[in-house]
Image (cartoon, rainbow, N blue to C red; front, side, top):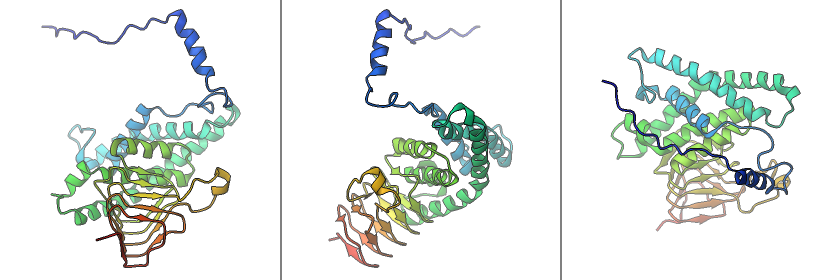
Length: 296
């Protein structure tokens, strides 16, 4: 017996004369800019970014089979996911590169996008190895974790770190806009805002994570632990030209713990190795190694 078709709730699209006039007004409303709010060219859609990230996470953490499997080997599953990922990644990289160039540069942009894609794929084993240290840091740092599988499946901090590590590689390889789109998607999912240009060492553990902000020129060492609401920010907003090449965000050395809602500001601010920054502290000065600040 044929299954009864469910009713559709998609609204009927009827373009009225007034819609065209309103469209003209909307498009002309950003008259102070060259040609609109996004005149440079098309970028990957939100749907494309979501699918790209799903495939990247599947390759980096395939044991959980987020995308499903046909019952074959794990190796075959990863290979098939990479096969789907490669053209999607290359297309997204190309859109980011070509948006500022004329049609005559299309071939050069395609060649560059293919090179960046190939290098990123070749770097995925190194990214996974680095993420393994992040997973172990979470397991060692959180007594509530019942196992590695729970961390991989559930922890928003690991999710945000994984996407950051891919985006950071892409940025280093010369990709444009796409790295920021990846980390902003993670931001929307987790509340953790990590700029892809930040420098973050091995065994990084974010516990809970909501509200964390890590600025573009932040430098974070190894085995750093960070809780929700932490901000690594700049002391002031400089003009774009004046900020070029300068470190505006703090340096956090190895083995530092930063508790919830602490704010650490300034490019000259260094939190020394093994220091502890207490919850709700506001730090605009350097902290010697092994020091505890802002704690009761």
